[in-house]
Length: 189
Image (spheres, rainbow, N blue to C red):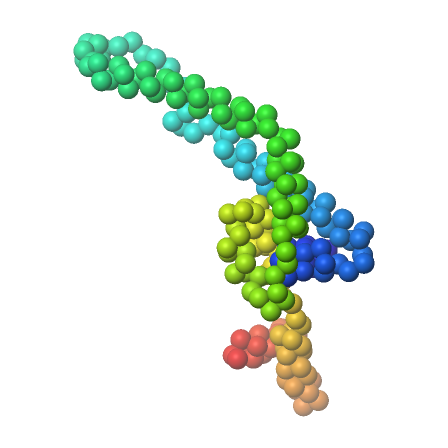
């Protein structure tokens, strides 16, 4: 299923990489949508948590030095109280906007799919670097999915190297020693 998500998030293929398999395409789209909603909701939860500056402190009795405050301090105090009220309301509004996470994700996916695919020989990572502000949630998912190795050549090299190391003459190698030799040979190149 990881490969289908990588295909979906690759701007060279998108929905066209699934061919005639509409069921796999639809399931992948739903999975991407669910993951995106979860990412957005976690971002909303992070924004909605009050910071120490937003927490209300209990007033203490003023001392004589505090009573002799200037008019500038009073004005600043009034402005802070206005923003304190604002700071309390915004996280509450964000918490109540769970429906917007779904709609934002649907809109982001639809915009992405309606954009033309790029040439197959172009660099998808360069395209995502340019488009990360337009599709921020999909970009975040892409960083986890487009890192999948597209070919098995490196693993084939390791196994062919293993055939050269483990021969009839060296058949008494322990598994641990064999793994160490393979590791060293594959990282030597």
